[in-house]
Length: 187
View (cartoon, rainbow, N blue to C red):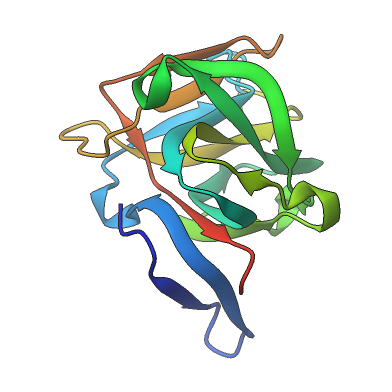
């Protein structure tokens, strides 16, 4: 929710400094008090994310507050979709951009902000309007999955938590917000 601020993130004690572009929208991980499973057979969520508003910026990256359970394999990606009914509506089902994939085995078992970069032609211009950024993973099972941090006790982001089932049908949940950051490509 803090728009227009440059962001800097340090990963690990001796890890590289990663810079991110100007912040487009976010909902802090400090709000996290709940979770949503991604691709668990008990919950048909192949993707979970958050709607947000953009005003003409070029997409550069996003981050989600996530962890893994067990030993999931394969890759996950972030995707951008438009929204039907504005920021409080639901995803329109049309993928506008897909991030570079992340090997899920590199995700930790403790929650952390994990960055996803949009490269080349995927750095689309987010014209003024409502979008949804989602994290997608399809290789899990009941014991090996990705978990995304959410706020279920007092969500205050003007958007809604978005989700997609295994056939990529999208929906939204106004009673939770996803912890996320979306940045432009100036970083």
